[in-house]
Amino acid sequence: MATTWKNWAGNQTARPLSISRPRSVGEVASIVSQAALLGETVKVVGSGHSFTGAAATNGRLLRIDALSGIRSIDREKLQVTVGAGTTLNTLNRLLAAEGLAMANLGDIAYQTVAGAISTSTHGTGTELTGLAAQVVALTLVTASGEIISCSLTEHPHIFEMARVSVGALGVVVECTIQAVPAFRLRASEAPFTLDSLLPQIHELAHEHDHFEFFWIPHTRWALTKRNNRTDDPLDPLPPIRGWIGKTFMENYAFGALCKVGKLRPSLIPRLATALPSSGSREYVNDSYKIFASPRLVKFYEMEYAIPAASVVPALQELRAMIERKGYLLNFPVEVRFTKQDDVPLSTSYGRDSAYIAVHVYKGMEKEPFFHDVESIMKTYEGRPHWGKMHYQTAQELRVLYPRFDDFIDVRNQIDPHRVFANDYTRQVFGE
Image 1 (cartoon, rainbow, N blue to C red):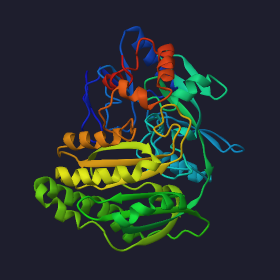
Image 2 (image 1 turned 180 degrees about the horizontal axis):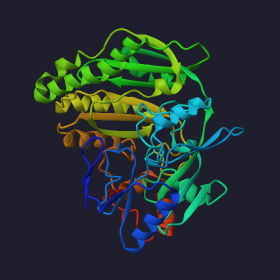
Image 3 (image 1 turned 90 degrees about the horizontal axis):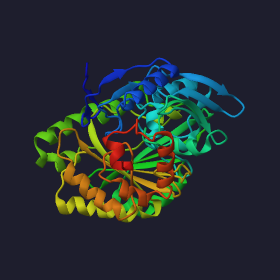
Image 4 (image 1 turned 60 degrees about the vertical axis):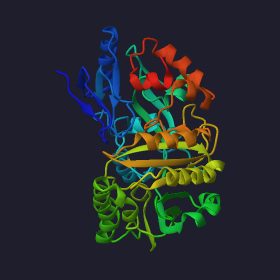
């Protein structure tokens, strides 16, 4: 019986032939090989946090949440092999219990390991890469049902492409991640005016281990977050104050403002002034507890990676466009940074990058605004996040990724009949 599937944001819907929850790698291989014999397609869904149709299918849908947990740890190399269905939240806790941590993380941790790396998910830090570049080996179930282990020494041509593959090469069932010893972060949060922030943005980004900021449209304010490694003792936010600041203010109170803005858009500029523009706070906690925060308010998101050197003019153009077009936006614009890496379809491949993310509250019109944002980002050779909304096609993306055709060659070799295809892979990789 067909079952309807929706992603977290509710903007992607599918009616697959079936939804399966394999409990072993062997079961995954069996389902894939059977589907291939019948001429059916297969897609894997993790936590459904992609805003694109990366997991949507009218073929077979696999949920791999049962493939979870740590499989092994190489203590000498600090490399950890985990089931690909492990959520980042779970992985963080498991690593902490072993005295280990991820070197860098994004600001949410609901995604599965496979989903996060496959879409080039990243955190922030000019000397740090995204998650995919932290993967040193993986196990892949190919379109024939073959189970292959990939690394720099074993099937290296597949490994380098499979780290970010948008699910188009096969089912990632295990990953080996380069971990680091567990560490603490000192978080410093403070507001700046955007005009005072932009001239020193590169200095701040390089001065701190992890730097990001959120500009609040319709105001002159930006909230900065500076996270730095420290040996200082734990000094977390008090439980009540932390819940008020992180859960209530950033979710329930903010969500209430968004609902009012959706009903009365003309009030949005005035409501924006209710977001924090004064006051600072500082605290120390385990790294993973500072990197990620609860995100309960649903939205649609577009994010582009551009050369880091272009971030100031791009933001100036974005602000001018919003004012000129009169867009009413009740979500901040987020800006982050990463170091270049060597993963062919990583959004930071070959260049230090700045990321500009824009959001629209769920249920509000998004298309005109997102198209205008994309037009600006294209002028800076912007690469769209594979898991966030964009309108680029294979023809356009081929120009942005120097090794795009190498990826297509590997895809032709291991999935010539497109068992892992769907509408989204046809958009971004072609037929």
